[in-house]
Length: 296
Image (cartoon, rainbow, N blue to C red; front, side, top):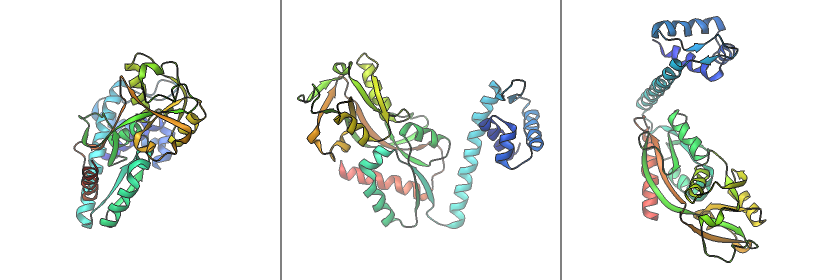
């Protein structure tokens, strides 16, 4: 078995087409088909169902795909390790940073790290926390910040922040004079939510379900400032991290704590278990941990 066979197999799966995959791989379609056929013969497993109108992976092929992705990630890790050894540099890494978290904590931390470790090359990848977790598993991101909980069987986890989500309402909202509210009291409210793929979406929805109802979602966005503007216009209620609220002009909104349940916003540095990490990536993790230990 060759690495090339696995690369070709995964590209066909991704494109769900031999012709599209051959264009991406810059090989002829007959050559690509021959490589996949050789892999199937070697494994004695049919990887794709070619009898349907659209190319579909078989059940057996889906199982092989999981192993193939792991093999290629391991090969990528080996290549990174070799590059670090050859160059004798501190290395480079891709840092996954959800936008809301980035605006709350990291600009000054990143600037300080780059000043202290100028040889370390950090590429920042902005993605929602849930999407970023998948990118970590696929090897597209090396280290990231996540909103807990995450799967401890798949990720190494270093907690860094414990905070809450607070409720923002217009000063014209009936709840505006309150200091706190129980989640159940929000059952009839219109929720202004971060978009699916953001862990904040999951945390708020899980809190509502725990209180006994499915939240009525009025709007979803990737931008916390837009959600606050909608809440200010009394178009719904929004859950916002307390660290973001610290920076707000609160003259046109009221801020309430929510109980039963409290919606937590606990952050951690995470990376895929048993993955190779460059010296730079591990130095970054240690640097962030030290910064938050000082703050807490």
